[in-house]
Length: 261
Image 1 (cartoon, rainbow, N blue to C red):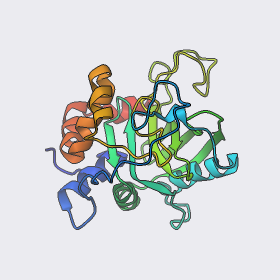
Image 2: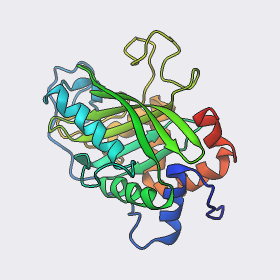
Image 3: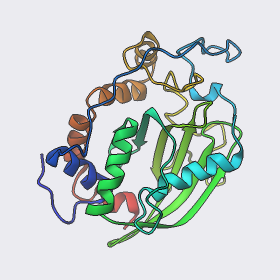
Image 4: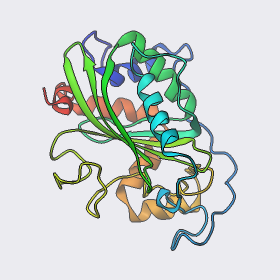
């Protein structure tokens, strides 16, 4: 594992430092709770625990979804009110597409602890935030700019929710052509049929509670069909091991590539 350096970037420094220094900064991957109640069969082909996020419809106001997304960025912004934290699902997951490091958080406690550590070790602000609500999952989508000491970093990010309005899945891409969920330059919010995201392929996110069962038959069957789902499930079983491997394989310039520096 590489040593901690002052110039190690963003959340990647945060997670590695948390892994190495311990002291409760990181927690073990959460244990899946008992399976949630079955969803309605109205979601064609989803069945019960196989339901994906697209099966759910908004149960909260558009303002709720936007505010939850803004709270998420508040946890990463040293100028924001630290008391503003999203209502995370116990099994919330964060997936950041390359050149970032894929699974960078699994579980509500991990999301809070890495945000706290980031504020101390690699402070940034998020002064530019354009967050909007949508009628289809992910219900909140944002274009933001992080300001680091090395310069600005533009990110496109999406947020998936359960029926209680809790955040269940966070997915991020560099806001750079070729790295976004769609190749259509006119589809700014990835609403078209060509958009590719993981949030709508992970089973369990479409149940009312939006809980992921890593050991369930639905996950196993989805993983057999979808290499990205299989990769997610594997990483979630041992998030810090796979995070460290991803960091080691990313290359010294991955942060510059992701930010377009």
